Amino acid sequence: MVSRALDHLNANTTLGQLVRYAITGGGVTLIGAGIYTALVLATAIHPQAAMFLAYVVCVAIGYVIHSRWSFRGHGTRDNPGRTTLRFVVASLISYALNAFWTWLCTSALGLPDWTPVLPLLFVTPLAMFAINRNWVFG
Image (cartoon, rainbow, N blue to C red; front, side, top):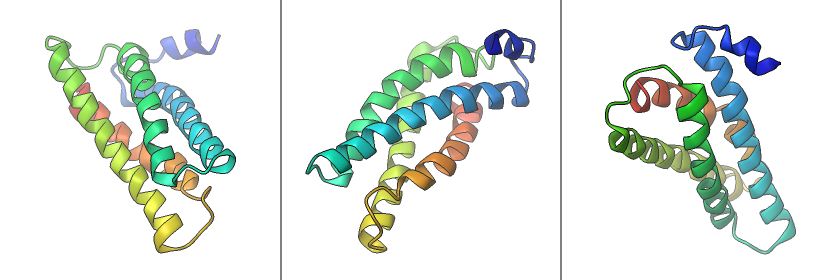
């Protein structure tokens, strides 16, 4: 039902893409946050290793969902290899941001291991929407 309602939004409008991106990106981000949190709370894994494992899972899921739904109908898809490469590069930027939040919160500020989840949920996704819309799928 939600999908049909969102389909009425023009696929090329920023608002339509932002709504779809928020849903799919939010879901992927929550999966990553869940993987990270479960690993750091239930195992002795280092927070950076947990963030990397969450990243790998989210990149695979994110590419499929964002290319097929979030940015459907946006830009040209005449070079899928270039789009895939750009998505990987953008994902590395996302990973670097999340690794930075992990370092800042857990090492530099000495906060609990779960605290990187906050900027992971609220800062990184906004930056990544802009990069994905304007560079990857643009």
